[in-house]
Image (tube, rainbow, N blue to C red):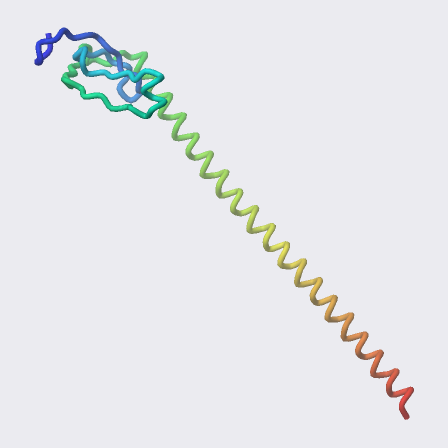
Length: 130
């Protein structure tokens, strides 16, 4: 029996950080909205009682190993994502630098060809205008 006088029911934590432990909870506590309530965004229900009490406080070795594996995997995944992000940033900077160099060489070539064209014009003017 719960503090409010209603019968309790057994539930199990879904999260891996709790090692899927079982606990007693008030039958009025958990609220599972129907599809209609989800559609009209009526997600709140007044929980009458929020009683929760762990049944098995000891963590099973299998659950503990699984939790450690999940945590190790999460850390490795986070490191891989950071490494990938750093590589993408470095690659982007490298491409931008290559693009800047390409634009600079094109500009120099254009200026060089313009100056050569201007020199030719001046020579022709000198020859044609004595």
